[in-house]
Image 1 (cartoon, rainbow, N blue to C red):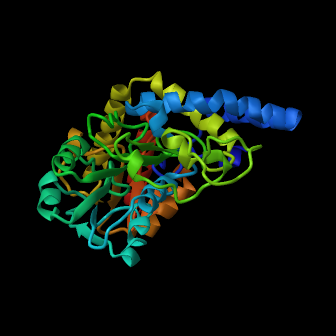
Image 2 (cartoon, helix red, strand yellow):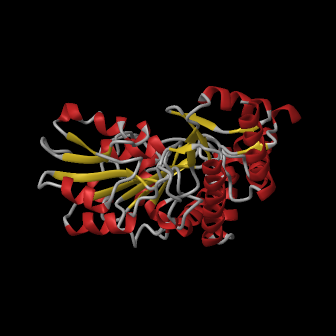
Length: 375
């Protein structure tokens, strides 16, 4: 097992290291099915699912019935994209540097006559004014990431949400790179819907996520997939018309859920809810500021430019390259020294977790500087 352990792990924005609490909870649930079969897993489901809704509601500042358990971020995007009754000519605004998961589900609507307009970004950044300028009477929805996957740019969702609310536009947020890292209040930000996965900053397992759907948006969404899990009727009742969906966002959970993954994300979010998000946010900013200074001193070029990151506009992610040393050479050297990172579009991306020790960051800097000396 030790051969899989990186000395320095800086890829939380890709797949984080699973919290020990989450791993233990998953093992407990798996053993319940192993030794007790259906009775064991049903008991775990009855205990975990309602509690997870409450934990998610605490994390986001919403009501438990506004949350649905999903498999991943894209799952949540598709629930909304396929649930709205679109009109020909409706327009959706999306920044031009969005992760594909928050683009393809909207592009899939073009065949229905929906227009997709991309908002230009500069070094991964844009302003509220950029969005305001792109809005037209046809704009139906704005979809964006709270934090950019390559830039680490932090969108001002409170201001954007207010802008959308004033003009009757739906506001959709991909929180894959912010949930568990930044404080999120979906009511304050007037978010219509938000989706995320659990295996990045939440430190949960791969294959689990959740969707927030506001009470105002809920009546506008028709479930694209239906099954016994979405119904008020019992599975033992005849499947006939008419049928009644469960109240709230649970209607989007149309079949059996992955209870072991739910156990993991439940434990992870429960842990995060007991930790100050302000403390996590401050640590992330301090880490990125340290890395930025060290990389700039080493002659590296940052994706977002050479100005130090502003606290209100950055979160947890820093991408860099060197003007003289190929990125492939840098990453090969990092691999040789057991440094975990991610590669995106010619840049090396760093994303330390909130519990990454300062010594680990200093070790990364030492190794990079050693490469520069050899080069």
